[in-house]
Image (cartoon, rainbow, N blue to C red; front, side, top):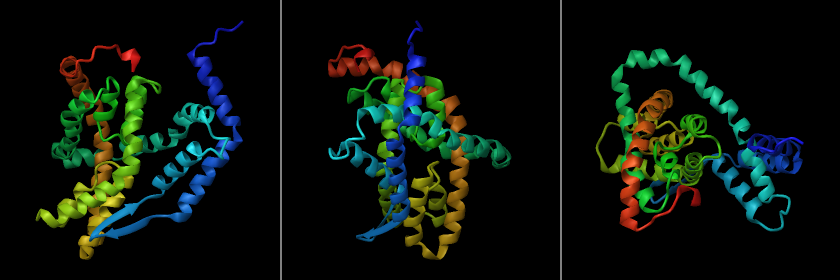
Length: 285
């Protein structure tokens, strides 16, 4: 009789996911509806907010899951989706890997100064990690705060910690929140900062390239509404900055961000437990 281990269980879930045609049809329907709606740009009190199809697809999928009449989408399909997630994001990760290799000469041409663009990401560690620990998160806080939790960092987290690890769960928590709130937030922030801080429009264009395609598009759309005469140049600057951020960000994440986050976690975790009076094992989370 074969032993049922974690690997065999995962393969069974994966096999069931491939055969669950109702799940695939539901996701296909969400994608078709989202693409049909397309990108929506809203102007509220002079602030431009861009809504992307990825947001609609996520909201529709959640609606199918929590709405009772749709009985064919429940916890079983949720478990199957987790099993097939790695295969679904595979093409995206391959694309990012190819882009990284193809654009290595750009990094060397620009020089070490381009790494300064990544310094902003360390704010998620220095500010976010202490707050996450005080809120009660444990190892999940490493995945949540070691980056902005977008596609370039996804492969690193899953490869380093495993798909079912607390760190990966924390990563995907922020990834989903960023999908829902990230694009409207960066649209509003870009418009407000462009009016309040007198920097050159091209500087703001480069700042839009944080390594997220959806957030980059939302930020540039808002910025172009503020500076319509520079719309083409802003797209060029933000596109190059976003590409460089995605390429260099992966290496900064591997060699700097994760080690710093883990070291800081080891230092702050006992302190946060003493402050909050908690004393429990990570396995209880």
